[in-house]
Image (cartoon, rainbow, N blue to C red):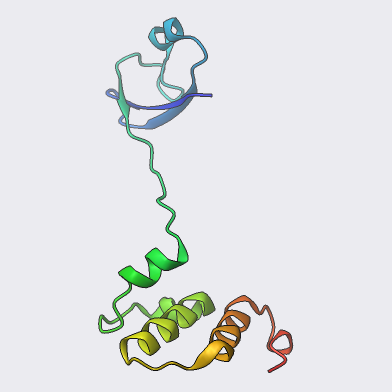
Length: 112
């Protein structure tokens, strides 16, 4: 279902509308001021990356914001990338420990 976003030229607010028929586009009005001078805008979107893409794009030498390390998935990403950069083959056990740490919800889940 196409959901379009419009910016009202009168009040500058953004509205979203579900448009089922092309001819209904002409009938869209601002929900805030009732204006009909609307400009279609691009909706925000998210680009999902695979784990290998994230690993390839991650730079271990660039300082990260403080909240980066509060997400355990990022710590695992850093550990994997850094080991690869150093040429350290830590074996299959390393991958298992990193994945366990990244997915654990509590310290007891680790069972290391």
